[in-house]
Image 1 (spheres, one colour):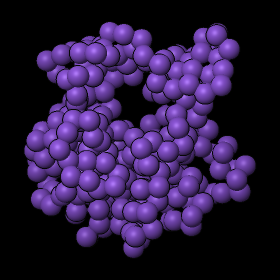
Image 2 (tube, one colour; image 1 turned 90 degrees about the vertical axis):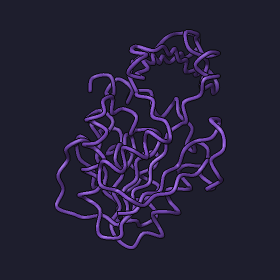
Image 3 (cartoon, one colour; image 1 turned 90 degrees about the horizontal axis):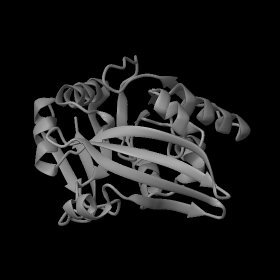
Amino acid sequence: MAEFDKAAKIYDDSCPVEFMGDTSFYLREAKKARGKVLEVGCGTGRVYLPLLAAGIDVYGIDISRGMLKVLEKKAASAGLSPKSKLADMRNFKMSQRFALIIVPFRAFLHNLTFQDQISSLKCFRRHLAPGGKLILNFFYPSHNVMVNDYGREIVRFKKGGFMRKDFSVFSDETEQIVKSCYWAIKNNKKISSYTVKIAFIYKREFELLLRLAGFSSWQVFGGFKKERLVSSKQEMVWVVKR
């Protein structure tokens, strides 16, 4: 959790407000939901706060206390009252049942083991109301990215005097685990860094995970406009029914 707390210090400076149109997409889906909404991995509120500001009855959980502190500070300055708490997606317990659970910005990939992935999906299913939906997104593992980008410093975000660089490598190739180091540079000086791990999940692999978690109905799209998934260059957007 310490690495996520370190990430909180630069997260808002190093990420766009809209990631391929994700915030607008999740806002539209939340407005269509007839009931409470839960964001898993709400972080500093990039997606959560626009939903809250739009009058959505939205709850949030995150594993990082540092991230939640930033969210709460931003909410207070905007006159909003967040319903967010510290919790782990693998084993959280809430009294509410939700019409919609969202897991934006590839947060599900932080589940590194098969057991963690199944535990999280089962936990989501337990917290969905009958007829509710789970919506999440993550990238399709691209062989071109692995060959061309891994093992090299890549500038991922640049604005004014601020820059974020990434360096990714396989920490365990057979288990599909990637370690990424991120660091922020401001006015040519390194100001912060953190390291996280994610697990690659392919389309057919995730379909098996959904079945093992008890789901039987879903769609997968190739982006936030719900295009057909045809390429590893597209973002996988999953809409899963309870």
